[in-house]
Image (cartoon, rainbow, N blue to C red; front, side, top):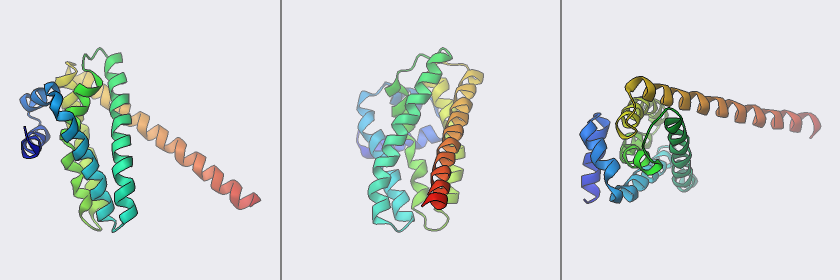
Amino acid sequence: MDFAGYLQKGILILQLDTEAIREVYRDEDALIPAILFVAIGGIASGVGQFSFQGMILGVFLMTLVSFVIVGLLHVLARIFGGTASFLELYRPLGTAAPLHWVLVVPFVGPFLGFLAMLYSFVVTVRVVETAGELPRPKALAVVTLLFGLCLFLSLVFLAIMGSFLLLRAVFG
């Protein structure tokens, strides 16, 4: 399948088509387009911010974060009895990454990105349910726990950074 074919599959996944999810998670050739779609989302983020550095850094950060998030998702899904491998989760989720290309829109891109993130929650539940062969309540629990874990880790990171800034202001 070519780039356009995987883009069409990504659109079908965004429409919550379980057959498209099954096709992509079984397709070993879908990994490169999935990574590419995620990387393009990073470029879109930089373009939306009018930042060349953001485009370069966005590619690496978006790709790295996607691997970490899907890794955590994989571990949680396995704990709840899911059967999908890491790549079986990554391929359909990465193929659905064009949703995040809305970050390219200047000024409203971050707001659209927030809405895309909320819809990604729904898509991720469907992918975990289909690829991981989990019932919907368990898939919802896995994705909700992942969201809560990411929120917690973000708050811890912000608290640590705030502490460093405070210490620097007081003693520096």
